[in-house]
Image 1: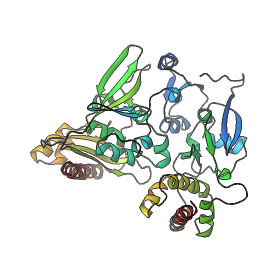
Image 2: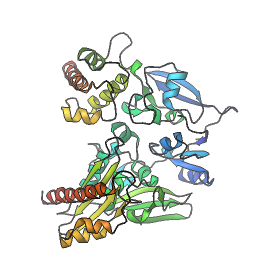
Image 3: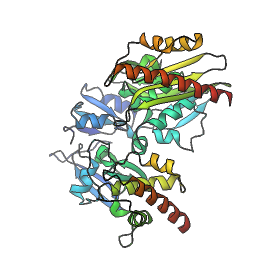
Length: 272
Length: 166
């Protein structure tokens, strides 16, 4: 399968990229491992591809209490032993869960979020980590919470001439631990249900869920159920669960177990 | 950088393939696997699923494994690409190739170039991987002859051979 024809440009600056993206049929490409498969299937058919590879948007840096992750950082770079930033455990779990080695060598953390896949492993983890996203456009910058970024399946807050340039992840506090657990579809590798839990030293926790609804989301009802010790399944039922395929009851059960296991690992990490 | 086409939609891309400076004249939509096979005649890179599932089209870009069915050739400008043809020295097999031949790491051989190049990425990162690490590293490469046990043995042997050699 070969994608439909398109024009290709590789800007050297963000300003140039914004200008190229003014065309509503233009689309930015990062790692391309979500976009190209869609283009091959003609599910996406941009008339122009704006290659972001020429922009200086990769790398991980610690800036005070914030870990700044360039949007074009690949999963492989994030997981590299050379990356010494104190990443939350959930982020590493989720990055390692994505695709396979070849996909992690190509796929970028920003590209994955901007793609807005309802079953994104990484999205659940950055939500639980309390991260914000830096969006840049000709109108200026805005910083938004990750859970507010996803509007629906493959739909995000990003405007046509706007790019996600950086993820800002709080450095984990002392006594905090986090983990991501997913049940992957054995054929596609995408999570049937995935849960990221960040357990704080005060007993409170943050929960990000993926694969079970129209978009990855923060699940405050689940956080409250964990705190109160009430039924996780009943909390999940209030979230508008959506089974993309397969048995909804099975997926609901997987989500419960994913939350329980992620919570268990997060608490153990918090103690160690 | 703006890539100028020649009026019929082709753009020039300069890259290194198996150590040689190479110029491709491709449409922007040309996938690397097609450029390698159809333009350069490097048919060791296989097309299995064409949907980035099977790994038969795996090549090395700057020493790392990528699925060439999911890379646009135009984006490889200036890159170093290694295909299965470029892994050995043209006369002798590479130690990974030798290990696969020796330890029954293949039956029909269609997945083998991809398996071997994914192994090259693995051994570059981890010279002494255990079975779990090998399974994880080859998760993106499917073998439909069900030769996985032989493949595991081949990778272990290749790792040992590489360690002894270096």
